[in-house]
Amino acid sequence: MSIYCFANNQIQLIEKAGVPVTDLLVQRGYGIFDFLRVAGDTPLFMEDHLDRFFHSAEKMRLTIPQTREDIKTIVKELIQKNQLAYSGIRMIIAGGDAPDGYTIEHPHLIIIQAPLAEPTLHLPETGIKLATYAYQRQIPDVKTTDYLMAVWLQPWMKEQGADDILYYYNDIVSECPRSNFFLVTKDHTLVTAQQNMLNGITRKNIIQVCEAHSIPFEIRDIQLNELKEAKEAFITSSTKRIIPVHQIDEILLRPNYEDSIARKIYDLLKMME
Amino acid sequence: MSIYCFANNQIQLIEKAGVPVTDLLVQRGYGIFDFLRVAGDTPLFMEDHLDRFFHSAEKMRLTIPQTREDIKTIVKELIQKNQLAYSGIRMIIAGGDAPDGYTIEHPHLIIIQAPLAEPTLHLPETGIKLATYAYQRQIPDVKTTDYLMAVWLQPWMKEQGADDILYYYNDIVSECPRSNFFLVTKDHTLVTAQQNMLNGITRKNIIQVCEAHSIPFEIRDIQLNELKEAKEAFITSSTKRIIPVHQIDEILLRPNYEDSIARKIYDLLKMME
Image (cartoon, rainbow over all chains, first blue to last red; front, side, top):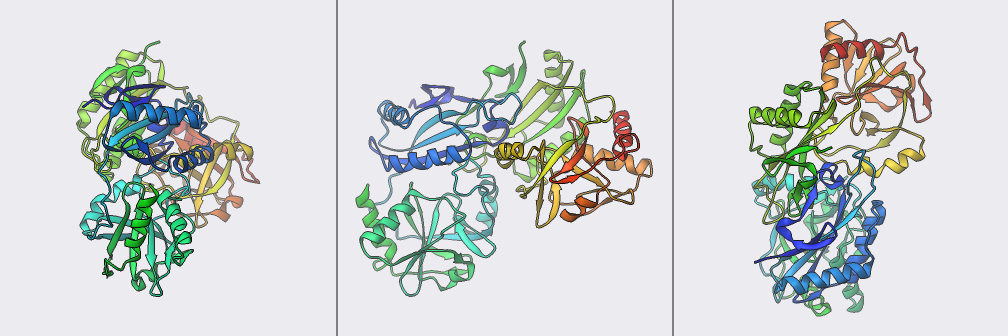
């Protein structure tokens, strides 16, 4: 199967597309990206992802050579050309060539499409285990390409028998490497972090759903010691919507699946797509 | 002028060499490197750089497909082919393709050679200004490709009228983004950081020079408030040997150039090459 991507200012076969070895993305790890899900030929929450993509680029001083409309046109072309039943789109801005190896001069756009599993019809019944780790992502409100710690921790995570990592710092819980984190308190209030994490699009949609359906929620710092009091916990991402968490370190969470707030929100989220 | 590099397992023209857009180095910023100076056709302190390169790779779980001897042979070939009067060699290990976008499976070697200015005959008389910034590099004993903060801070640094950045964290001074930092105390003792920084090859050579020539030195934490008491300060790197520091934030340092410890060490370092 031939998959096309956008790189070097043209649509081309992905196996022929390369980032120059002199690029700031290669030599200095300097880049941002965004990732969105595509259902058939519909990119989901495209405007939200573009908002965040342009925010990330602006904060990192990466001028995107294309307009929003240009990007939408390229994404549409790729979707038409690749004909994938269900997929993800990754848009990257690479720092580009820098004669001094340091100064941003020629940032450029890369767009990759790849097959993706469709989220389940309802909330998955099987939850995952998280292992907590003390770490704060640098420039956390930007979706940079820096996943050094996340990739590095994979073997450690597996040793803990965990499926994902939950970052905290100074005893405050922030996020997972690729997902936002939510918990439900004993009094049925949904809580998610207010700072030092990425503003997820699914997180944003959940807040909207909570407002529309009068589900009590709080956006505030989550203390590490609140985890053991949690009634429910789940992580959220554009790829999976919601994945329930059944264990964090040694803390077991076994919410009633049918009654869970996660399940209710999952069904409401699905209707937004 | 055609410059050759090593990438995709072959020596090829640098403008034709690209890192796949699906590589962990591109998508997750996962890679390590080392950089060494080449005088004519002699790579300087090659064994030390290879030691650190292999240490970085091992710690980051990146298996280098080549042996040390293979790498030396490729470096020699590039030097012969490129015929640069004075140059730098950058050896990179990229995370490689990962079908799940996360698991290290196929790390690969890239070697780039580029022209470099020859260090001056004696210590430069003109010093630079450093601006301090609270930051701790992640996995600091590894030479990762993560320079996100360093590149991002360039405009801020220029606003401060500074030439480079000096990182500190919890009031302890560590390093500059691409150099180690040294200061000379009022009692003529040379001091450099002991932890949370990269083990520079020039730093190592300076320690050796100090031992051989009975120059008093200490390897220990440097408190931020020690900077204002410093008699001299300088930064060190494989590219420049030593650059004197004449100002840190608002602190002015104006050592006697002829008498400086920096100058004495510079001349001794030069003789090691």
